[in-house]
Image 1 (cartoon, one colour):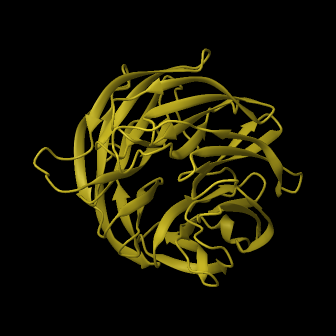
Image 2 (cartoon, rainbow, N blue to C red; image 1 turned 180 degrees about the vertical axis):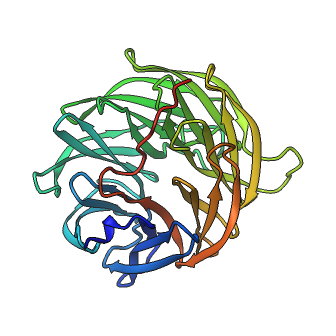
Length: 367
């Protein structure tokens, strides 16, 4: 029997900042009854596989190799035991790739890679076997921002495709913009942009399952931006900017990751420094955020997290632990499950499902 057929557990891969020759990608299991986690396998040979993404329709995994001469690699996932077999590896033509996304339009699909330090975005074509088949386009951002140390140039931090795979929204921390690209047969063609207040530093971005709203995490000014989406015209309009921190916090903080609940009713974000997750309720009529609530992440520097049915798993990079929280589906509130898993320099969590990839949503009737 395949480990993917288990009904009492959920599998996930974890990426990390791994040394050359050491393990960097971990196959892990979450016990849905207790919240306990364990490592089932590990894969080495990739330097700094800090961000991983799975395509469970094709049983493939892709990872960055975050270094000055960036690379990305493709793997085949064994449907029986989740083991990885490397298919190939290609350069990202930039420095420090930090994010990957799969864009699918019908039978076609492309892999998008964001190079942070060099500020360029790559689209890769994929072969029939799911391996990286070549570079389809390479777009270079230009400019900078008011934050002299962090915005001396462009810093593409994530590229998030639309649900139909026909466009991508690129958050650039260095130029305070979400750059919108059309995907024309996998080629990135600039379509427009949304400008943020100076010094915002947009990092990660999610699109609401209704398609009417989107949300962006801003690393440099500790805010979340709510956007109205025009799906047909591929436009974003900022609606409001909401703080990610309690009003009485005065320490250093850098927001990182952002995710929606599976039903689209709640939004979560991670705070590095305050070392917390913040939960917001989403107003179904306006898409705006309210009723913030914070919980400590049980570790240091929550870089990435995953929202599952019943649980949230948080990757605390500096303390090297994944911490499990139970999630109340009705209130969105989190409570410690009393379980954690030690993984050195853990940076990314990618949940797996044998029928569909991570990020599958069930749209509530009122939205």
